[in-house]
Image (tube, rainbow, N blue to C red; front, side):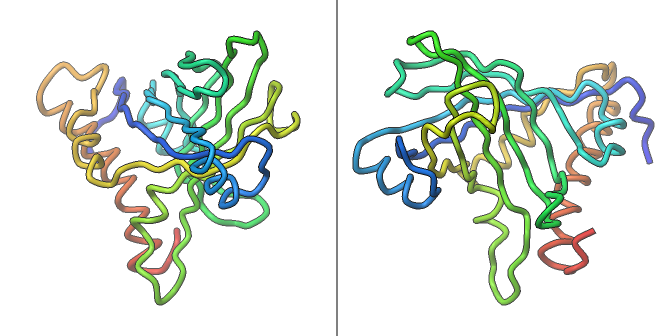
Length: 206
């Protein structure tokens, strides 16, 4: 394995979809959001300061920042206190998750907390990997965390054809040569794709 000491990773992605104000169910929220034109999107930047620590950590947590757009609250706002996790384990369901969590302050001066999750779990007899890695079940809370009253719920999506550009355009902070850049990109790609192969093709889920 290549030496990953001093290497980080930065990549960006955009997710968007419908959320329904006053809804608690993801699917009902998506339908209500489309009916009422309550669209949400966010342009996210994920920063992994230490790639080796990220891969070795059970939570695989990284920094999340960027902007969230939600017209019902007044437009576009910067994310605060954002955390992204890749293949963390849900303690109750014992399945892998990709999670996105952050706060933002709207034009009304109130703090809102957004939590989104992708369920990385193969259902046998289905080709569901593409759906799972592109579907973000999303809740919006009026307050600082998920314990605050729920304001909206719905489903955001990542366009699958953006996956290859995401991987190709990754930055590798700390890399001072072409080969170090490639080592960083190969390590994160192997981790991301290898986990999906074990879950959806080999069936080991480990």
